[in-house]
Each structure stands twice: as structure tokens, then as C-alpha cells.
Amino acid sequence: MNEPFRRALGVIRTLKQHGYEAYFVGGSVRDYLLNRPIDDVDIATSALPDEVMAIFPKTIPVGLKHGTVVVLHDGVPYEVTTFRTEGTYENYRRPESVTFVRSLYQDLERRDFTMNAIAMDDTGQFIDPFDGQAAINKRIIRTVGKAKDRFLEDALRMMRAIRFVSQLGFQLEEGTKQAVIEHASLLTYISVERKTVEFEKLMAGPFASSAFSLLVETKLFAYLPGLAEKREELQQLSNYEWSALTSTAERWSFLLYLLNIEHASSFLRQWKLSNRLTKDVQAILHALSIVRSFADWTKETLYAVGAAAALSAEAIRSLVNGEKGEENVQALRQQLDSLPIQTRQDLAVTGKDIIDWYGGKGGPWVEETLKKLEQAVLAGIVENEKERMKAWLKWNQTHEKNC
Ligand SMILES: Nc1ccn([C@@H]2O[C@H](COP(=O)(O)OP(=O)(O)OP(=O)(O)O)[C@@H](O)[C@H]2O)c(=O)n1
Ligand SMILES: [Mg+2]
Image 1: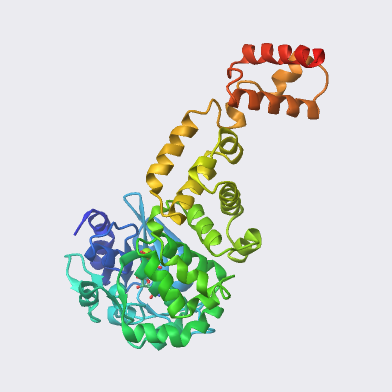
Image 2 (image 1 turned 90 degrees about the vertical axis):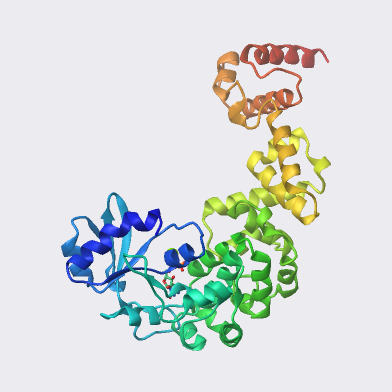
């Protein structure tokens, strides 16, 4: 057992001392068996939420309807969820309420994939009634029980299957894959927000190219915002090494670029991305529209699009052109570092300085003067130093008048 589990042992042991069963479950146990880094350690217990809250001094009732209580233990929050089945399903979504049960088996039985249905007790023993460990060893993703039933319960699981392919490089077991093909249209019932979470994880996985092939093969793509008409282009996505991209904004930008999405903002709105992310993607797409080759970067274009957008655009441009992205990005970083200023904030003179120098009221002339200074500093005509810029402006004005 490794550190994240050991730190949480107190929670499991306390529950057991009070006569309840408690186990580690879900993604953390799977990732532990895979030697992957573990982020959240989830705990399942036979204790009801009220009972959990009565035992621990510090709890937060985050999802009582689903049986989840957060227990703070040594300053770390743990989700402790009562064994449950998901009872009746409406519209192929996870239900509003759940049925609590007292057996671990029933809890594991309602989970999506066998690799996610393994429990581990406080001694490090695995309880694995659906052969999840064998699936992990064979590197296959297989539903617990009938795939159809699991997908009717929660259609998002079909996307989860493919995002796990992207993250783990596993194969979809044939029956599971056939069931995705048959039930792809159920994805219609799933909220955009949940699809977006899965899609972003899918794009970020080291095996994203296989995942894109599967999205096309299973026709799941047809039920994703703005992608229904993009079959051919999506197939192309599987030819690229997505791991060359390093941020969510970069990945969305690459997607939009390769899919030839004309109206970026309405496409991104359909996916309900945050304003921040949308702006970042638009900045990268704008930068991409300026450069066709590395030679296109000039001091002026770099300054105009900004460092972050330029570096992302270069990573994408290199990937599309089959060039060595890391080298190009590194070279561009050096080019950026050698700029006298990278943003307006770097300019040693502010609008206020200009008003102080010339007196009078603010107005468009202040912005014009700042622009003039920016260009001169960028071009290396004047140093980014207050007094020098002041002198240069003065000289420039008399010179202009004399002309
Ligand atoms: N639609 C879903 C979502 C989750 N689960 C179960 O709940 C666990 C925890 O869910 P979640 O944290 O969403 O997924 P993880 O498998 O932990 O994956 P990740 O590492 O991305 O968190 C899963 O392992 C699985 O057992 C499920 O059966 N059906
Ligand atoms: Mg998880």
C-alpha cells in the first residue's frame, strides 16, 4: 500500500471500529494496480451518511442524496460514500437519488468497468468479484455485467470507456465496443458539461489518437457538440501525436484548427467552455492565422499576439507540419526572451507619465503616443528607459514638425 492510502487508513479503521465495513474503491485502486499516480482516494462504507457524520468530528455533507460525505482526516478531505445501487434510472442519466445497500458486492456490481470495480481493504487485500485485475493485466476495458445495462444506466459511460482508452492505452473489449456502437445515440441525453469533462480528458491522454479513431468507429462523435458533420476530419485527428500539446487551450485550438471550424466562439459556446478558456483558444487561433512557417514570427507579430498564444500556436503549427515541436517552441521562447518588451506592462512609461510630461487632458493621443513608444522600443530604436523615451519623444516631435 502506498502513501495516499496509508494516510487515509485512519478513516477506514475508525469506521471498522464502529462496526461498519469500509474499503478503498474506484479509480484510486485501479491506478494503484497500474502504478499510476493516485489523486483522490475514495472510500466506500456500509455506514449510512448520518452514521458517518456521527463518527467523525469534521465532515462536510457534499452529496447526501448520493450518499457522499467528505471526512477531513489529518487535514486531507476524503469522499466517503455509502454502499449503494443506483436503483431506477431516468433518461439514461445517473439518478437524482440512490438506494443504499449494506453489501460491498452490490456496490461494486453497479460500477461501470471491471477495472473500476475492485475494492481494497485496510490490509491491502483486494476484493475483486468481477476480475478487474485480470482485465488490467490484459489491458482491456470491459463493463461489469452486461454492457447494455451499464450504458442504459448512465450513457456517459460510453465516453468514459473511450477516454480510458486515451489515458491507459487499453483495448475496448469486443462486446463492450459493440454495445457502444449500438447505444451511441443515448449520449443525446447527457449534459454538455459532463461530455466536456470527458472530452478534455480524452484529448489529454497519451493515446488520444486511438481514442479519436474509436469515437469515429463507434459513431459517438455524432452526438458531440458541433462534431456530427466532421467525420472525415475527426478521422484525421488520429494521425497526430497529441501528447506534443501541453495545455487544454492548446488541445481545443488544435481540434478547431484541424476540423476547420469557422465560428470558433459559437463552437466553444456549444461545449460551454469558460470565457477564460474561450479567449485563450481564440488568441491561439488568431496567432495560428498569422504564421505558416517558423520564419513568419517577427518581433511585431510576437508582441501583438503575446507570448502564451505564440508558444501554443508554434506547438500546433509544428505538429501540423510534422516538424520538431519542442525545438521550435524552445527557439521561439528564446526569440521572445530577446524582445525588449513582451507586453504593454513591460513598457517603462505609462499613460500617466505621458500626461505629466505634456500636461493637458487624457485622450486618444495618449494611446497613440504609447503605441509609438512601443513600436520604437520593439524595433530597438529607443531603449526601454523612461528618460530616454522622454527625450526620444521630444526629438521625434521637433523632427516631425521640421519635416
Ligand atoms: N459514470 C460512472 C462514473 C463513475 N463510476 C464509478 O465511480 C468511480 C469513481 O468515479 P470517477 O472519479 O468519476 O472516475 P474514476 O474511475 O475515478 O476516474 P478518474 O481517475 O478520472 O477520477 C469509478 O471508478 C467507477 O467505479 C461509475 O460506475 N459510473
Ligand atoms: Mg476518480
